[in-house]
Image (cartoon, rainbow, N blue to C red; front, side, top):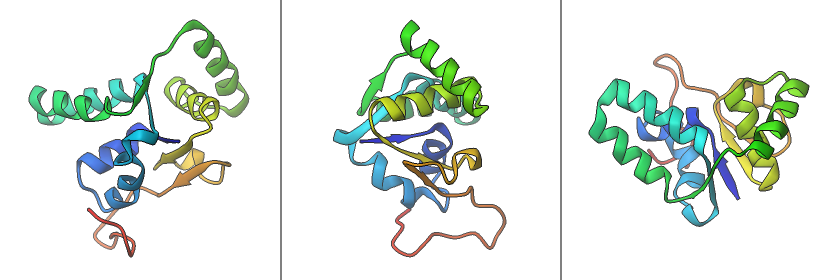
Length: 137
């Protein structure tokens, strides 16, 4: 199973240099776990930056995976994980869902780098950043 966090979804949809790295997880929809909080965060950014039409298209694409809602049990478990690991609300929910589904967490968030079960690619900055060999935009 794969869980792609909001930063990675945004990189993929914006066709950033790291898009190919995240495409491997996003395009394998049968193994894709999508926290509802990621749908919210990505929809919010795309709505603000590109408008309603693009935001709804992005949300529809994200919902091809298995969307995981936030219920009371998950919220309490995520709160404990967030407290233990010093994570924000969204990141604690994302990390907890990845653990519960034994999913690899694909991210550009540096605070996840080096954690077990995480595939981390730093956000590209500046003109020198480019795709890795084998990545597809």
